[in-house]
Length: 156
Image 1 (tube, rainbow, N blue to C red):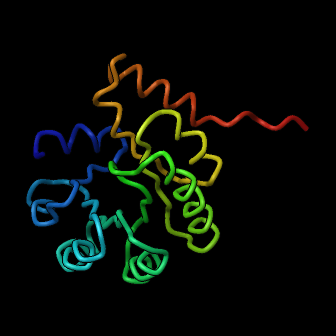
Image 2 (cartoon, rainbow, N blue to C red; image 1 turned 90 degrees about the horizontal axis):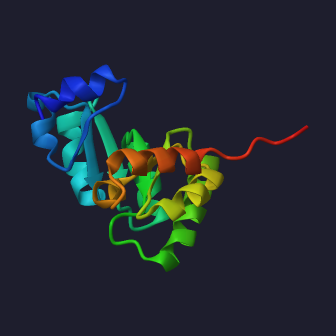
């Protein structure tokens, strides 16, 4: 992480560790993505106010509100275990979140097909974990994701 952090940060991106809030400061990472309210609540003391504390794998809208009020830097909906049927629910949560909060709302895309739905719902960020196993390679997967994230411009 110490070697990777400057490379990521020099590109204008933040390096977040999935969990491992205790490693963030000593590794040079910018923060942590925390799954579930228990992990999020426990890590707040270690991360805030200097580091990013992202809240994900939230079980309910109530958990999302509690995390936001506690100081989450973003809320993420969906995770690696999300089923196709739950994708619509995630989009609904994104719409709800973006209407209610000013903090960024993120979505976890299990595949490229979900990106456009999440962008239309108002996601500020989309996690693209699937790119690491894309048969076309990481660069092609990222390029494709970028194309899918661009909504057609409205003609006036």
